[in-house]
Image (cartoon, rainbow, N blue to C red):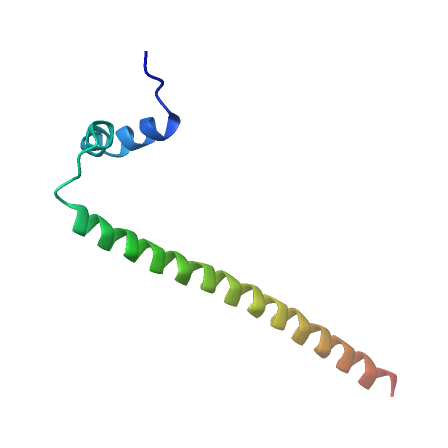
Length: 79
């Protein structure tokens, strides 16, 4: 009896034909398109990661600016 892995179930749920190709060791006729899709998703993922970093840096800069304003106002009030 053959063990069915969780990744196979995921492949089948995504695309039964892809699962069939994987199970029978054959290649899909759309391999070129699938490679292009993989490349596209990798580039998109990199952009999303970069956007997350930029967003965090923006929040840090905003917090620092607010702190500087509060310190400036406090120092001006003390004089």
